[in-house]
Length: 159
Ligand code: FES
Ligand code: FES
Image (cartoon, rainbow, N blue to C red; front, side):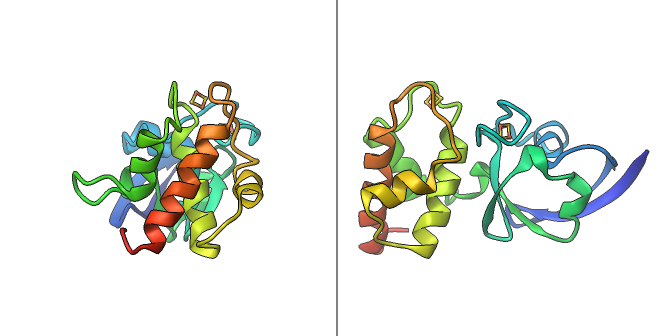
């Protein structure tokens, strides 16, 4: 059965006809073509599908899309300023925070929520914040470096 879903995605109002069983990750990828939201496990374990829902991270493979009606979704495509990368994206690029990149959108969105709540995190606080985002490539060290570098830059007022 299909139902109308109205929500805001990356600042844009959207109205879509979606399967009532579809999860948010599927709607973002398949209907809105926002393929930066990745699907790894599909069961809430890996964090590849992390997006911000009203500013807080959720695993979008576990959110029924219709439950996001009327809410505000931010995906990785929504954080850059036009062609200028967000400082967090720049930090991941310049500090080798990614290899295959599959985990990267979710890592970045989890890290942004951390810095919103705690602009000066310690290394262990960064590790705790990304604990729900699995990376099979990097060993996490350069991801943590990237987040700490972004935090410093954002505290210096570069947004
Ligand atoms: Fe959603 Fe793995 S795809 S947590
Ligand atoms: Fe490959 Fe993290 S960079 S899974």
